[in-house]
Structures are given as C-alpha cells and as structure tokens.
Amino acid sequence: MRILRDEKGQVLVMTAFSMACLLGALGLAVDVGVLFNARRQMQTAADAAALAGATEVFYNGTGSTSVNSKVYAAAKANGVDQAVSANNVLVTVGPTLSPGNVSCPTCVKVQLSKPNPTFFMHTMSSFFFGNHSFDNVNVSAMGVAGAPGYSHTCMYVMDPTGNDTLDIHGAGKINASGCDVYVNSSSQNALCVTGSAGKSDLSPGGEIVVHGGQDSSGNCKGDPGAPTTLNSGVQSSPYAKTLPIDPTTNCNAGNTIDLAASGGTLSGTVAGPGYGNYVCYKDSAITKGKITPVTLSNATLKAGNYIFETGVTITGATTIGEGNGSISNPATNTNGGATVIVTGGTYDSGTATTFSDWAPADPNNIYDGLAIYQVASDSNPMTLQFGSGSSIFDGAVYAPSAQVTLHDQGGAVNATQLIVGSIYLNGTVNLQNYSALNPTTSPFRVITLVQ
Image (cartoon, rainbow, N blue to C red; front, side, top):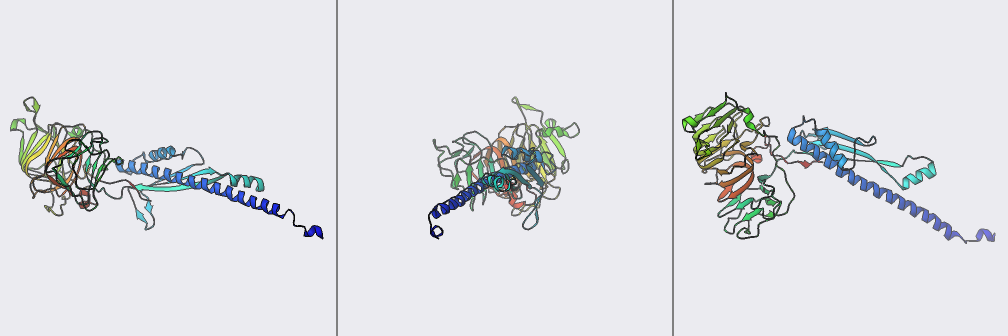
C-alpha cells in the first residue's frame, strides 16, 4: 500500500508529457509558419503572373497567343514552374469576377498551386502511421489583374534621362482638375520650376509625380504649387494599343499628294480619305536646305488619317475631324474622327487662332483617342498652341520623343492627354482628362491588381 501511495516520479512523468506537448506545439507552429510564408510567396507569384498576363492583353489584345507564355514566365521567375508536374498554373482571360458576377474582358486571372514540404507533420505521420501522407501540403493562391479603369494622369513626360524635361517657365502653370502629371526622367534635375512661374493647380487629388528629382540649381527650384512626389517608381505609357512604327507603309502612289507645285498649302474644306483610311501629304520643295512642312491655313479636314511626311504648320482657324461642337462636353461624331500623323519634319500650331481637333473615339480604330501622333523615331521639336477659348481639342497628343513647347492663349483645351518627350511650358495650360469625357472608349488605361 505504501508503494501505491508513493508520489515520487510524478513530476518527471508530467514533465515528460508536457515536453512532448510543447515540442508538438512547437513543431506544428514551425510547419504553420513555413506554410504561411509559402502562401505569401505564392500570392506574390500569382499577382506577378496576373500582371504579366494583363500587360500582354493591355498591349496586344485578348487574342494574343503570348498571354500564357508571359504568365508562365512570371510564375517561374517567382518560384512556380508549371513545367514541374506537381505545380499547377491555370490562366483565365476575361474572367467573371466575384462577388457580383462582373465580367472583366481586360482582366487575366491566374491560379497557382504548389506542394510545400512539412517538418513536424512529416515526422509524426511517418512515426505514428507509417506513411507519408503529410510530407507535403499543397499551397495555392489566386491573382487577378487588368485594366478596367482609366488613367488619371493627363500629362506624361517620357524622356528617360534628361534634365529639366518638365520645364515650367515664366508665367507657366498647369491647371488640370483631379489629374496627375508624371515625369519619367531618372535625373535628379528632371523637374525645373522657375521662381516666377505660376502655381499649378491639380486639385482635387492631383499631383506632380517625378521619377527623379527637382533641379535645385539656378532658378529651377521654384514651388510648382501642386503637391509633388519626387523619386517615385517608373510608370509606362498608358496607351493600350500598339501603334504603327512606320505609318508611311500606308502611303502609295494613289494616296500621296505632293503640294510643292501649289505652294504647299491646304485650305478650305478637305473631304479627306474617309474614316479609317489614309491620305499622305508632303511638300518636296527645299527651303534654305531644309524640307518644307505642309501648311494648313483656315482648313477643315474631314474624317480620316492624315500623314504629313515633311511636317505640318497650322495657322488661322483650322478644324480636324468632326464632333458635336460642345466645349463643355465634347464628343467626336461616329466615324467622324481624324488623326494627324507626323512622320518627318516638325509640327507647329503656334500661330493657330482657333484649332479644334476631334480624335477617333472608337476602340476598333488603331488611333483611338489620338488627335496627333508623331512617331517615336521623329525627335523633331513640336510647338503646340491650342488657340483661343472657342477651340475644342478632344484627343491626345502622342509624341514620345518630341521636345514640346506648349502655349495656350485662352484656356482652350477641353479634353486632352499629353504623352511627349519633354515639355517647355510658358503660359497657362488648362487640361481635362480625355478619359473622364470618353470613359467607355478611352484607350488610356492602367493595369492594376483587381483581386
């Protein structure tokens, strides 16, 4: 009986039992921690793969045959190789999103799964049950990315390395309600605002975003007025279409007109080639050793794509394209849009008195939303003036290599996007976001994670 009442050794038994429980809890915590870390890595891989697929759709459409390969490459770069038999990479283009069962044709959904090894569960499974059922646990993640919304940036200054690529000078200032201005240069002197410049107003919510910094030398360190973020991340062009590198391949003997014999000027009403079709103009005359731009003087150009191979100068009251005539709520007529395409020489609208431009508002048009397109290989300077307050400019300027001098006589710009190489601004320019007025047809989209 004394032996039964003897309590010696109980602490040892309880300690051993407690240690086993603690070790089990520790082992389980290690496994759970490892699996949670694997889950975070899988989510990163799913998001990166979805963004890669959405970028391919953004630039090349839902019919692109490269969507899957872009997704697979991004997933592999983040540790999920679909070529490994146990890994799964499922790609869905244009998924229906939940909750709400909302279709997103610009989106790409990526679902990933991959087995991840365990430590404690592997040991316990082998020791107690003699099998390896818990050697690995499948970890999965889903990412959805697309461009269902439009860009809120009204001005992109795309030179990647230049100094003073956005130069707000003299009385220069930008009024763009709710818009951002983005400066792409990595230079720490990318932004220049002279001390006498006006204060830009991008409220509510707009800001100047600079990949590099603001020039602190000389007169460049002035206050831009609007909130400014320096040393930001890199943004790419928001234009969702792949533009022709050499539009002159659409020029031939039947649609090319040399205006040298008639003084190089177009005036009055020009019927044009018709919506979506091309006509090509040039002036082969050589003036002081330089090519001569075509002049549009008090001209009205109807719908179509107008290629100017030797540049173009716009004077007087000129209208390009056809629209509803509204300043407050401009809209291009159906099949009434026109695009000015500059493939050589300079573009200059600095002497236009009124200048109205109606860009195509049609997702099926390769120049959707573009009023002026100066090809990337043409780095000739561009002078923009949008004329008087009665002008209507419903479209974007896309000239990613051009140094642009920007003037505005009377707050004439009512809807525009500027995507240019660099800008020298001397005067007040009022910009509205093209996408805000054309939300269903705008090509200026931003790729974001949706789910």
